[in-house]
Image 1 (spheres, rainbow, N blue to C red):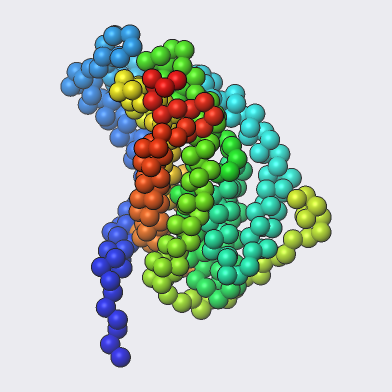
Image 2: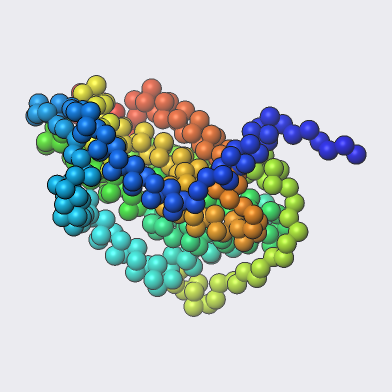
Length: 361
């Protein structure tokens, strides 16, 4: 029997996989990016590039980080860049609570309990939905849920990479959405507030500024992620014949336990001058940032997820992960953008006291 002809989408994803597998390791890409910043600073200073500060009217020029003064600035500013970061205090307090919950095993048990208790027919939906909710626990979803989902799918006779892809799509592709506020909310609010001060020094962005929009996004992305897994990702992966690892049920004692920093100073003031609120700009950023995380080799957990994939497919590379996650990126982006456009057209507030335009405040 002749092999079935692949669809244009499958051929495109195969091509993306081959191309992506030629990329260097994510750690190498990080190093190259750091070197690129140094080189661009030198090029910009040599070209004499300048910009006018929109609030003060002062002229701003680039600093050559490869010069003697530039190198000293990099070294001497390491600590102050960290301690002078406005959201740092709020985030550290939130992380103390998250760290205590994670260290005690509460978060891991909660994630395992939700997924293990799910009916098999709903396992994909539960995996994606739990992945989205896991960002309230900071990065626990990457470490706990992604490998767990792979083992669960394999135990159910399904391809483990499909399970890990569904979990990764929820954890990272839906990173900004949630039913509760997480550590990302005060972090982004602090950055957006600092950026808004370029135009309006008295402007403050509430950490719950995008809460209404993100709650609605949670259910949308869970449904979209489930459909993409069933209709696109799993059929492309085919069958898997490996051995299913043992998954430990919850023990009785466990049951009882139950980049914006760079873009904000550019886009927030720019859109404020056009009449758009910082909250709306932040919400739009969260959409774009979340959906592209899962296909970005520079994402901090990309190398970890790739290592999880290689447990079941040793030859998997950067391209394998990108090609597997690309359908989620496209589907999430189109549906989430549509939701944002409808939200704006209806004039709905993004969160408590967070309007869409500056003249409505």
